[in-house]
Length: 350
Image (cartoon, rainbow, N blue to C red):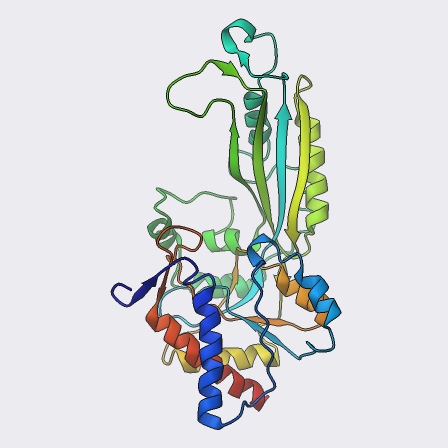
């Protein structure tokens, strides 16, 4: 712990936020002798790999898990001391692509110019995914994309987080992305195609003059309301096949996926959550946001249990989740305890 901040793997994502749930419920029980609502805790550890076993578990225990609402803290706050209610998440579709050329690595002097280079082929394929302005160039990629509502654009424009803050947090020299949208609009309500890893051939120090026998790229696509993972993967596959050089062999393997999520922040439960947030951060203006990340389980809950999810996150933009020096401010942890205690009371009132 340094200067009121806990540094540890999972401190924000998501052990610290889970513990805030537990302690908030514990304080409610201590102060009142009983809980104001019936409560079930369900903690699972596969979210980062798509929670592929959770659906079967929910289906097998549907009656025991019957509820009116789910609350999750696995999202973030738009800025310090800013109570934040997340009502939307992007979906995800993952894919790994391999390009195969010769059966072995070849000497680039002896065979260069005779056979196709898989590393060059994978680079050319990746380059076809976007135009020069960052718009995804896969045919039909945007066909089902839902438009951003006017009230959302107005609300997001007032938030204390914009291009300046993006550059400060990321260390990038300038923002970049689809034209006609702000950085927040691109991250929360527009789909993307991202290269997560790319490689092939010699990776050591110095030179080794080879034509690699294969090269690969790992891709993920963040999806927005009305897009579906299977449809997007099919369109990307068709695009890659159409653009693959004929002198190499293409291998495509689909990965995990999850639908985008969008709920009504103005519902009765949504308003209860906003009252709890306001009480936990007194005197601070509430932020209604979507997030660019994905939590596939919220749609699993909706499909199997038939209920909506409140996303009440406490992570800050510079929490470094999934990276060295992941951190969680103690004041956010304490606010999370207050939030979870107050949330039960507000839900009971409804």
